[in-house]
Image 1 (spheres, rainbow, N blue to C red):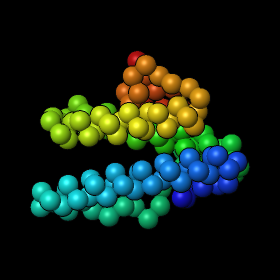
Image 2: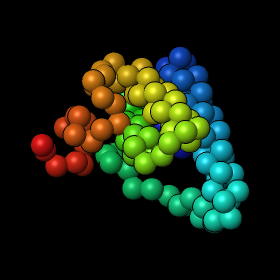
Image 3: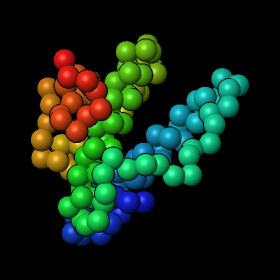
Length: 127
C-alpha cells in the first residue's frame, strides 16, 4: 500500500487497504480501456515525489486525503472531457475519491475535484 500504508490505527489500515484496492481496480479498468483503443497506456512510474514527508501515521492520513483530492481532480477533468458511459464512470470515480478524501480528512468542499475549490495545500494558483 506504499507510504499511506504507514500503520494507522486498525480502522485506518482497513480503509487504506480498501482505497488501495479500489484505485488498483480503476487503474486496471482504465488500462484495459486504453488498450482496447489500440493505444499504449504506458507503465506507471517506479516512484513518485511526495508532497510532504510522511514520518508517522498522522502524516500518512494527511497524505491519503491529499492523494484522494488529487485523484478527484483528475476524474473531474475526465468528466468534463467525456460523454456517455465514460463520463458516468468518471463521475462515479470522482464521487468515490471525494468520499474517501472526506473520510480521511474530515473536511469537504462544495465541488470536489475542481482545483479552484481545493484547499491551501493545492498547487493551483489562487483565484
